[in-house]
Length: 273
Ligand code: SAM
Image 1 (cartoon, protein in one colour):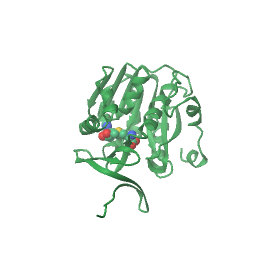
Image 2 (cartoon, rainbow, N blue to C red):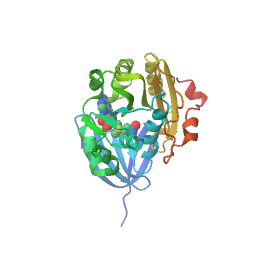
Image 3 (cartoon, rainbow, N blue to C red):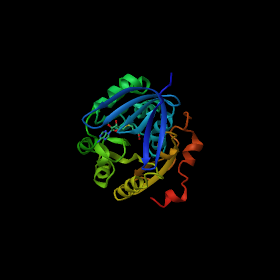
Image 4 (tube, protein in one colour):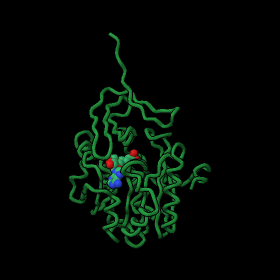
């Protein structure tokens, strides 16, 4: 009998894609906002895809989630006590802030189905939503931000790429509202895409943030299942952004050397920001 091989591919360009051989497709559904798929892959365990783009896999989610939480946590003068996460419906980012001892975490995810999918297929990530320090709201982060002034020390944009519901999370108007929702000297971080395949996304985020905040800093991480494996994040604050060493304990990716090194940028990335 001839075995049929199944593959999930994420298209990076008309001429290039990354393919994962899959044991099974566990779910495919269309919500009011996007299409969600879950695959059981051979090399990366379960994989969550939204609109055909990889959001996380069991094997490498730790890189993204540690780097979107532990870096901003340390780069803000005051040790952050209240954190707002926009997106992040899988629960991974909230889980990292719990590990850092944050007692007030509000997570605003637009699509309740992402949370349900995480509950079913990624229970370890989802479990952070059962912690009393985490408040989960199903709402549009853009709208939420306008209604909550001066409330959060740290705001994390853990969103999909700047198309569809996340489009409005990458422009100056949104960043103005983020600034309004931050406490004095607060800091924000956004995932800002692959500098190699999505240079416009990085330029859009950094130029928008520069027009609103006094200081910005870009850092990068190695995330094997994201386009090119080389990913950027951008911090913005009116206060000085530097290492205040609030908690440098090592994770699986993060450690004090990684924190310092992640801010050393190649020339082609510097030229984009
Ligand atoms: N780690 C991921 C990545 O960069 O590929 C991000 C993961 S998380 C699943 C992204 C979430 O952002 C999605 O669940 C999506 O529904 C949510 N999202 C997109 N636009 C949003 C908005 N305007 N308000 C709140 N959440 C939003």
